[in-house]
Length: 251
Ligand code: ADP
Ligand code: MG
Image 1 (cartoon, protein in one colour):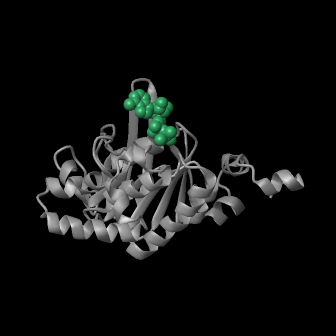
Image 2: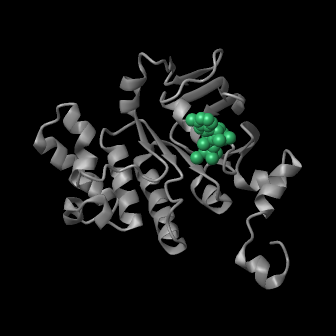
């Protein structure tokens, strides 16, 4: 589905990514996990061709190298939810969701059918779609962002900290719904998060990044029980659980 070969990215003096090699399997959910500044957003934007890797690196999407020439077309097959949702404030939720389909010349009828389908999938009441983004709750906004990313029925779904700005109960509810949605769709999904619990709950595979490099790649049990580096354990234990606070024992 997706193969990253020798991906580096330098911004002036900052080396945001260093020789990343990664294979992302079809139909699975892969998590890009890491601290703020570890290069997660840079990696996701290189995957969809919004930014170019340094020379010598290539992203292969369905076997095709992503280039500045074909990135725009390939992005129609890659739904993308940017950090902070990125809905246009002057458009209604419906208009935000329908934007790309309208641009590609879909009929109003076809758009309406697809939007209704997606509202059902994301469990958003259809009448809410006439509101503007500021008139929606954070959770509703993220459901709309997801609908927008899914409108063209992409092969790949890229989500950059989709739940980052939500409070814990809404976040937990959306995690459950997202998992259900991914199972229903069977799509290849890549999600960025810094939350290890979210990573373990949603992901089939976790890719832990540190300073632009992959520290370990595997399931949550693998990261917990066979850490590839002391940093893996440090990272996991840094996220204190309420149980640990109560018992005084790291769980
Ligand atoms: P993350 O999403 O994991 O927080 P980013 O990919 O946003 O990390 O950033 C990785 C590193 O690259 C950071 O040190 C960040 O400051 C730097 N960086 C990101 N975007 C730019 C940019 N447009 N110009 C300069 N430096 C950047
Ligand atoms: Mg980021």
